[in-house]
Amino acid sequence: MMAVLLANFQHKLVGDTEPGELFRIRFRTGFAICVNIEPANGGLVRLAVLQGTDIRHPTFLSSEAAKPCMSYGTAWAIEPTIGDESFPATECGNMATLYIGNELAALRLDPPTAASDFDCFHIDLVNGGSVELNGAFVPSARWKIWAVEDDRNRPGAKPIVEFGEPAAA
Image (tube, rainbow, N blue to C red):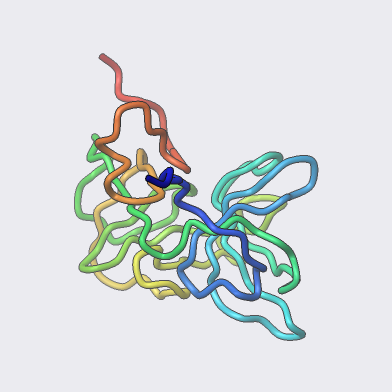
């Protein structure tokens, strides 16, 4: 009988990831959890940087395609938590808040230095790529990303990304 390795990641280069793929890279003095948004000019890949060392808010950057990463793939799961802020709204301006619509979960990305209503854009974490937000959405200030959906129910499993404060008891 052979041992079973329960690793839900694989080693890749950033340039070998697909739009919508979740992965971890070395970043500054630590790491960052990223999503491939789209290919960029000059052999670069445009990334959404969700969390990591020295990351103050969800942001974006262009990475060299040859940079190594640890990929979680594209079958990861988003788990929003409905809170007091969760009501249909048409304004989507809060950083680190997930905006849930029909078949999409949009996240605002701001420049690395600071929030900017002029330089920000939204990405769709479900379908990949950048999106224009039109219509009504339900905001969720608390949300998690799991490597795979089954991890939510596995004892001791922790999400890869977690935003927002836990609800008061």
